[in-house]
Image (cartoon, rainbow, N blue to C red; front, top):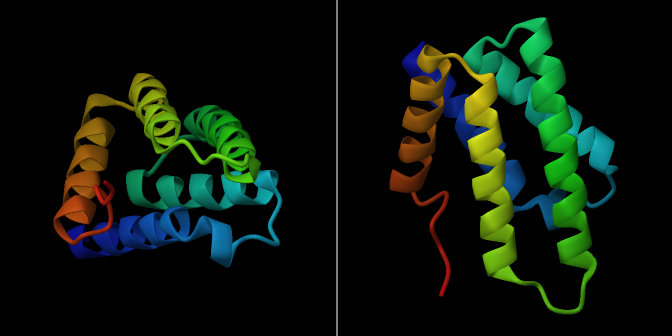
Length: 118
């Protein structure tokens, strides 16, 4: 089960990492739905949590879309947006779900799915 959760997060990370290319035809709402679905599957979110996580994903997707469409893609602003998302997500998740999410993030980083940059 643990490997399955990691696989789901890796898929989530892949979509996030290559969002500009892979889901350029998707609306921000569709991106938010896909990301919420992946988190729901990996963290077993309740219906109430799903609504809250969708709202967070939608807000983040809109901000990321704006940043991608701007002439200067500010990586620091993108990182800050992700940090804000993680902080707000932590308020929605149970302590057990927070631990799972942190473990999945760490696994993604260890596999080179994040932390790239300057």
